[in-house]
Image (cartoon, rainbow, N blue to C red; front, side, top):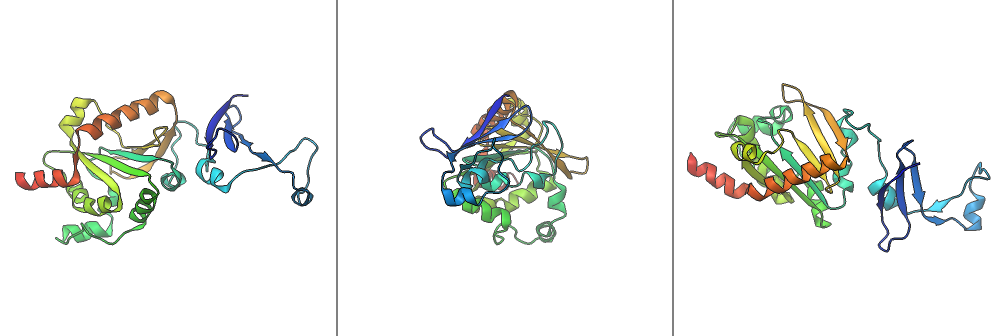
Length: 248
């Protein structure tokens, strides 16, 4: 049996800790042994081979897999959406597409194409969560790779970006020619805590089909290197917006 460390809420290197048996997918739990006689008396159907440990709820909330996707398997985005509340440090995204079907089908798109301001909309569920996570000291960031001139979809996202930035989602912009020069991947992905790579898969109509999840070290390292290069050379939303206005 080979165990893969999943996470711990211990500050001193002791229990509690979660592991995954990579051969079976089973979860191995390390914690303080349950010894209270009253609690032990309430347990049901106990076999001689079984023991019981006590762990904090936070350990399961943060590290217990909601699903165990097969590497490379396409799964619905909603099955990994919990990571944006349970990640420990950073959630970072690279956006490379020229448009997204979800944007074109949204109510703000209709208002924007009618000439209305969409830069200061009231907080939605995404921005409320960003504000809560950043309040806890976590970080959201993303780099949007854009064309010259901007596509309609890219212009829409630039118009809406101030609301995201105000919530704590740091959005930067990078021209596609610079992204090509840096050798950045032509794919959208989320990088969670520099250890989990979530790659978004789209059809030709810009509709999200699902995501693949990987913690394979070489793939995660390549994503970290792409993040560092993109972040270094990208411009803040405010600076990029001023540049666009001056070029018009």
